[in-house]
Length: 94
Image 1: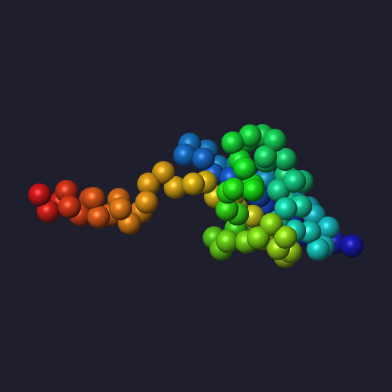
Image 2: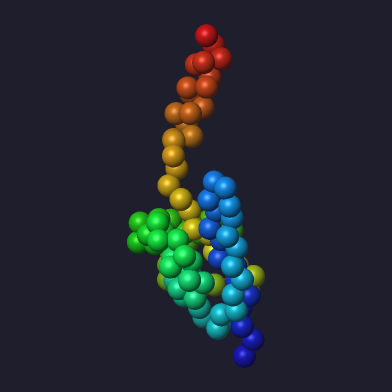
């Protein structure tokens, strides 16, 4: 049985962690996160609260993976993008 090639990605402001895995067919996002050990290396990750996705689209932890999927762990936004744009526009008008 051929394994699925999967990447798990976690980006920080100063570094990006990309882990390549081989998982059994039928593996889920949760399986990939567990197999990667990313949560043990980065204790600030709380999968129960943080969003995850596959190639920029939100995914559920029980979603099945396909060959060459990239599982991404998203960090909380520091600032609301809309508010930031409005603030910058107001500063330019001054």
